[in-house]
Amino acid sequence: MPKPKPEWLALLEAQLKEFPRQNIYTLATTEHGQPRVRHVVHRGVSPSGLLLSTTDTRMPKLAQIAQQPAVEAAWLFQTSLVQFRIRGDAFAVGPDGMPSTGAPVDADSPEAAAAWWADERARLFQSGIGDYLRATFARPAPPGSLLADAPPPDTWPAAVPPEATTPEQHAALELARAHFAVLAIVPRRVEILELRTSPHRRREWVLGSEGWVQTDLVP
Image (cartoon, rainbow, N blue to C red):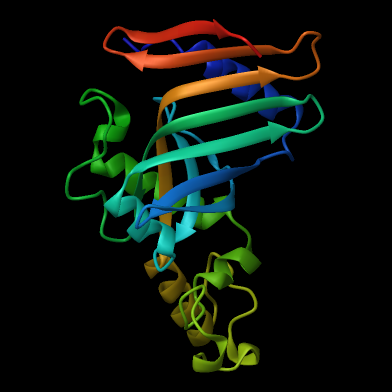
């Protein structure tokens, strides 16, 4: 029997339904004890409530997450002025499949199976991103590396369709697929701050052994 959806997730999905274009949040990781932050595009929610995005396997954040999986996301819906802060553990699923330690999810959840991640990665690569973004995964040099050491930008693929029709497209498609990964966040603590109300309203949900526990906080 599936577990009931936590209230915070229902609230997040309601915001996304009303404001589907406000789908970018800030994700913070750490590297050698120093903060690292960037914006990522939300790509979906898994059956057990994991937040999904996509990334290049060559990105520094994957090494950071492998070293320290604890992350925090900050997500402000600017129209409604509702802010979500989501803490949890992150992991990536690339061409080699799930992490060697497995996904930090319940053993009876769909995401505990490697096949679920293989299917989701294939779906997102095929239809979850556009041709221009797909092409970025086929660039010959890692993101963030020195431009002076990379091949000239005018030689990089500009667009990579999900189905190849030429040898060049096939080569670019395979290179893009080899660098494509799904990034997942397993939420452990969620805070919602509603700024349109007066006074503001702040609530927190913490995942414990018996499920999510909600507490009202001073805004």
